[in-house]
Amino acid sequence: MPRITDYAHGISAIDSGYHRPMLDAIHLMVEGDRAAIIDTGTNDSVPLVLEAMRDKGLRPEQVDYVILTHIHLDHAGGAGLFMREFPNATLTVHPRGARHMADPARLVAGTVAVYGEAATRKMYGEVLPIPALRILETPHNASIRLNGRELQFLDTPGHARHHVAIRDTSSGHIFAGDVFGLSYREMDQDGRQFILPTTSPAQFDPEPYHRSIDLILGKKPEAVYLTHYSQVQDIPAKAEVLHRLVDAHAELGLREKDAGASRPERLREGVKHLFLEEARRWGSRLPDARVLDIYSNDVELNAQGLGFWLDSLE
Image (tube, rainbow, N blue to C red):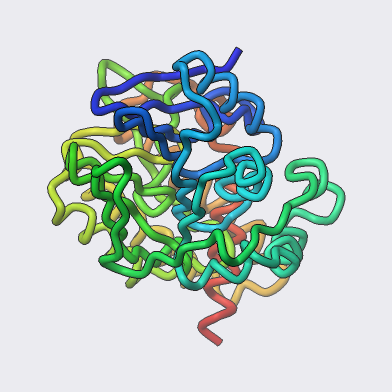
């Protein structure tokens, strides 16, 4: 059975099943008898989303849009298979990502460079191409309408240059993919939500990251939906944390820039320290080992992303 969290405004989070529970959210938006999917997870997510839709009385023919925040494969790996299941849907994607959805060979090769061939195939299977005629590019300030409900696209680089956030004008809420951080529900405590930025490969860049956080903050949303994992509130406080920790990651990277062969390990240890220090500052009651277990993959990816960023400075 799919894990579904229903919010107001016809918005639901469906657990994609990627790696572990409540790691990766696919968002379903329903307006009247029409629907949109925001981010797709992997091919393994397709049966879970179809079952969740059936539970809500929705048919695949009622999906008008598959909307991608960006094309990293935990967000877009299942897009091709979803588009085969949704015959009336248009895929929306940042202009920088459109060609990779039509021909995903380079996208897959980039993922193999991070994870290796065997792990990439195991996690993502075959990433299917999408006919170019079914792809709509969504640059900054583009908009679409879901049964009359306007969704506005915001160019939000910093995590990736092919990243958009989506503002739902009906609720004022924003779907932020990865550019507004990671907030796993296992860390929730006393109604408060822990948050950290993601600096994962391969296009982390602090200055545009700060601008993207401020752009989202300036829209004054009451809630932001993250792919990892779903709805967060108290947005000004979370933006403040993200700004501080983006800077802390950049400072860590610059300190270790010339560490030579030991740099990857020093970056990993530095990211672990940042994560644990922030958990203590926030008042987490979880043991350090549990915090690192929840964020284990993100420690590695943040460290790798810092390495890519440092290489780009040379």
